[in-house]
Length: 345
Image 1 (cartoon, helix red, strand yellow):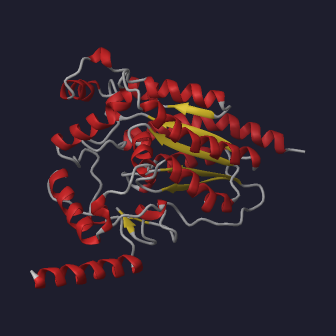
Image 2 (cartoon, rainbow, N blue to C red):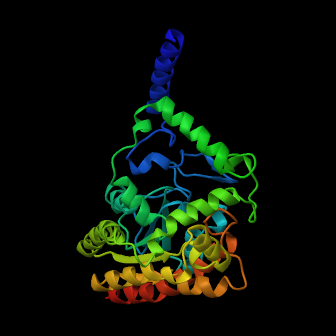
Image 3 (cartoon, rainbow, N blue to C red):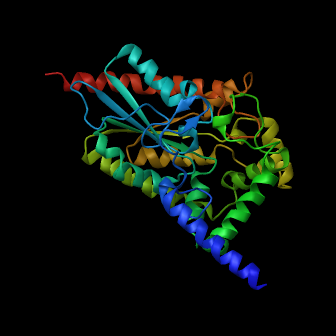
């Protein structure tokens, strides 16, 4: 027992020293940078920039005539697909085909929530003097993450050893096959990540926001939206265009998965409204005079003939990224032309 206690103490100290030198997402941290990529590390065949973002190097100074857009978001923005197929990359390419003096910086960091989006904008994004902010809001977990992050810190997170053990346990029971880091892999568009059982459990938990009788969702909704409202206030003060892109969860567009979730929760289809959060967000954003793009309808339509999400992953595959890029491009292009017209003497 004495040896075990001493070993635990030294391992705890070792983990804490390691994390202070080379921080890891395994250990608890309230900072939005907890899941930031390591500078110059590889994601598939792409090298992250010096700040750990999956994009080319950012330039603080903006050249004359440049229209700069910053794209904020979580793992959807960072992307599980290669860099060249990421929707922010594709949007930039499509815009540059019409306006060569446009650049889009991808500030995507996995596992962020609306509070983090605000912090990221204030701490980093505004330093680049953007003309437009795009905020990608994922319905699947942005509301729930806001709710969870507002709760007390789990007991196991106070110990780095316990956090490490839990990480290993979650890893081995959640993923399909052997888990490898993306930098050691060739991208496969149809590769499963989570097991069928664990992916269904995750979607069942997320689907609470689609239940018609969920009195607690109102408070969660208001808590998340206050940060978007704050971003909007900053954008107006700084004369920056602001666009919120509402990203649907796969359960909203995949009828087979939707039926599995309803059956798994032992509920009836009429007890759900899988477009409810979209309508609530549209009403709230409109009342705040915030521009938004809801991707639910085009994704529902296209999903009837084309798979848009990686299997058991919840993130877009290549086709999903391309569809999102096209819809965002069509929304931004008129605003970009309008903005340029206003700036002309």
